[in-house]
Amino acid sequence: MKETFLRLERFTSELAMAGACAMLVVASSLGMFQIVTRFVLEQPAEWSEILIRLSLIWMVFLGIPLAFRQGAMISVDVLYRWSPPKMRRFLDWAVAAASLLLIAIIFWWGWDYAVRGQVQTMAGLESISMFWGYLALPVGAIFSMLGIVGNLLDPQRNELETAQ
Image 1: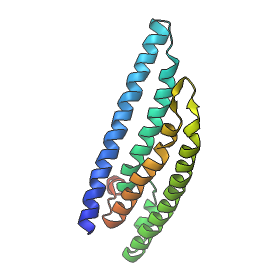
Image 2 (image 1 turned 120 degrees about the horizontal axis):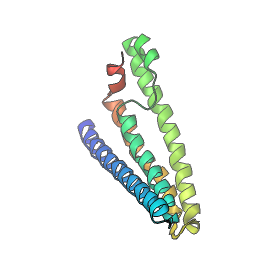
Image 3 (image 1 turned 90 degrees about the vertical axis):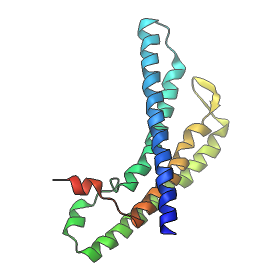
Image 4 (image 1 turned 45 degrees about the vertical axis):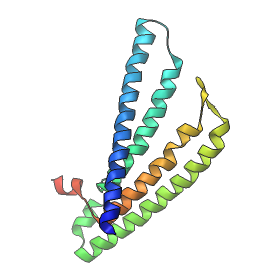
């Protein structure tokens, strides 16, 4: 059961990271496009700024799960180093519980905003609903929850091990 969950979590984390990387490519490409149209062609494309902002929001919320998975999101390194092994496992559970609570709140309010934003359109892109912008919160939250539980089941302390 544990291995099956970790396999699922690994797949979803890779999927989220691929999405985050794609959003970075979109944002940087649109940024270059915006520079060319604004300063070379002197015909700014106002819609590109909105799409850059939207892609950056998606990039952040799709990148957060990997930080949770690697144990790099909430850093309690000093306390963790000074604690005996039994206390360390308690810290793992406490950090996971606090993180899951925060992510559950982000999921709840993100979904609420997305549903309410269905009737609102993006300024500069009137054909696109704000639902797609707000949807980044609950989608990122779902991926993050999997990463938090995955880190609890199979802890990875990459930043703790590489710290001097």
